[in-house]
Image 1: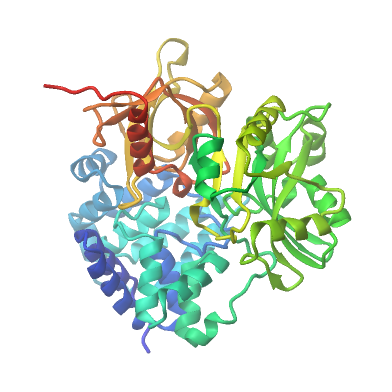
Image 2: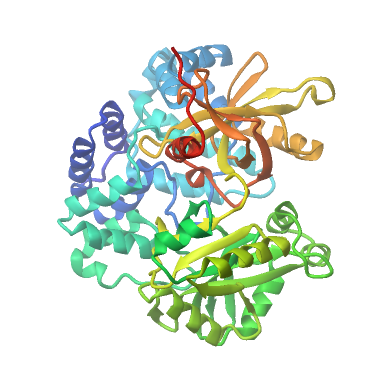
Length: 565
């Protein structure tokens, strides 16, 4: 069978972008997957979803927008001004790339003599770019990228660019891909979803289905050192709501202001993965040592929270902890300056056995049996409001964020946000939003990008929808660093405003959500201020515009609406 060209994948993405009908999307992608060789399936699925690598991979392309745009301008033989004019017409970097290449006489003449890119070759090129590091790596990356784009037709270049910036804009998301894999390989959707939960990667599941069919799914299980997607929680306003949702007796745990980690152990080998499933092992040597010394298991996958503490053991703000996760040098010195404490709260896998279908309290019991001297999250199990409310007060008095509330019979569902786990924060719920643009400040902030446009993710389309703007919350040092990072991902610059790729997530506090015709969503955050930079989250983890709308509507449970006319 001839290798599948990348152009066919790009043309498929064009068709996806042109329709909003989900069944047509699923049919089109299913037909495409059926025609692929087994080695092409996982790379194709990843690229359709806007990822250059498998989800479990720790590789990143690490290419700035300045580098990417410079290569495109060189390939098209255009000046930057011409490229930005194309961008202003479409509002999309990928479409602008396609437009300038289609209008380039130099490019049209060159492609007549070039061979076709294949899906496997594109993955290979992405890997070569991701593996390039060290002295002279920038120049080497540029040469590899130029070689890749030199073989790309305009439509292929459009989607290569979108994969580089991680924004496909086709509306085809992970859930639709699971339905597609089920249809393409004639497998019940529930089986695909279960396998996808365990592996954390629907592309890997589709590859197994292509090679082995349903029988292959039966052999999919947890692998130590392959991170698993995390179970997620929804918000509850108060203790009463949580108890009502869970129908009686439930588990209340301290919600720590730390970094959630997934810990994998095999013998004396330990690896620690962050909330984003990136490897943070090197930054936390004392946690590695604690797990090796205490955890009584040959193999285990555990979950916990790492909290930064002061000399007396009291928790200190989250941003101090993030310094530990960023540190790659002088780790011992950093560990002395910012000590950390681990609290375990769940176990997914133990000595060859998956525990995710076990009831939560049973998993907690197994965790207590193997944790040694490592602390477990402080917990009570009750159905009594009069007991739960003081427990919330105790958590807050101890410097923690609030409570996690877990249905005592709940299974662990990787990657799913449901009501079996709830979180209670006694303040107005902050939102995790993405910075999509920034403006230069005034006065002493002149020359810094210090006014930030904030956006929520549309769960239906994957696009980012602006809901407000703020210049409050960051220190001068953070603003300087943010300016550097935003300039690296800039996609467009007009007078005073810089549009950026949606990569940086910030936690945002606000007084209320109000109606506003200024924004497409017709809502805006009032008195928004950034409370912290969420280095542990990526754009896929941002709150959705649907969630923002839900909070907006919930405001009217206790107050009336303003009626016009």
